[in-house]
Amino acid sequence: MSARTGMLLVVSGPSGSGKTTLCRRLADSGEVRYSISCTTRSPRPGEVNGRDYHFLTRAEFESKLAAGEFLEHAEVHGNLYGSLKSEVLEHIASGLDVVMDIDVQGADQVRDCTDPGIRRAFVDLFVKPPSEVELLTRLSGRGTDSVEVISLRMKNALEEMKHWEKYTYLLVSASRDDDFGRFLSLLNAERMRVGRILG
Amino acid sequence: MSARTGMLLVVSGPSGSGKTTLCRRLADSGEVRYSISCTTRSPRPGEVNGRDYHFLTRAEFESKLAAGEFLEHAEVHGNLYGSLKSEVLEHIASGLDVVMDIDVQGADQVRDCTDPGIRRAFVDLFVKPPSEVELLTRLSGRGTDSVEVISLRMKNALEEMKHWEKYTYLLVSASRDDDFGRFLSLLNAERMRVGRILG
Image (cartoon, rainbow over all chains, first blue to last red; front, side):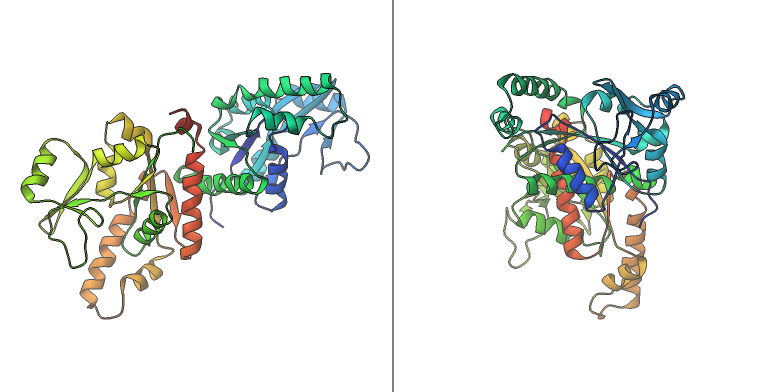
């Protein structure tokens, strides 16, 4: 192992881009740590605290939020979600790379973070589906959803896709294995960056 | 193929780092074009004009030099060597990536080039041997050279190695296949750069 500090790889992309699968596979390969979000929503059956999420009460979440402990956060359907700065900083200080799978608003918040450790570690990737037709196919799921639901998903995905130019890297999804190969390439190349090696 | 313009990948490193093997292998794989240097030295048996070098008379070389046609040039043992800006610009304009295997002084010249096409395409890599002991082994060759010759090579290599911090990427050589894998990663990652895709 080199003495370099880790990187924070922020990955965004619309539903149907395959970004979550990519991030999970990278974490499962042992190459990186997956950032575990905090949430105020209740655990679903099978979800484990500290593995799937850090489950917090709303009071706990809001107290951390007021203390500026979140790198990014959002409220979705009445539940709060967020990533703790301390968790990311601990991993990168010990030379581990962290992958964070968040939407464009979350990525904006991380990009704007002024913490020098985060700024140095930060790199971002946008994952795009290969085409709108393919995106529609992927968002249509198993054909059990209504046209309205699918249309809304498609609208949201197209809206999210407008933001790719803000990112350092763009991965246009092809096959799962090809995508993963390019994702690994990005990680390996960033590990060779002199700026990171010098710290 | 995407509509992106090509990149200019400048690779430096001391003798014994394996950089030339890496560049040749990348070019042989069809992934990139190898930049062919001009030289005023005479062709050696088997060398082909336009493949190994562009062989020029000193008058031809000096006339191009005066016209500012070289991206970088140097005089070595009384012979002039240089890379033509036009050759690189043609390749990158047609979306081809170019690899250039040059010493740190040559890389300094390319890095200082003010041509906007070159500046946009430029990325540089320094290849370092895994250790000084391994470097000495590699530079000792087949054991037929004198201690003085080997010492001079080692001195030059150590001098060249002082410059790695100027580069964007550092590859610390391990095995040939591992090195090549990381070299390809770098190429693939740079191809995913939004800055390059936007042109």
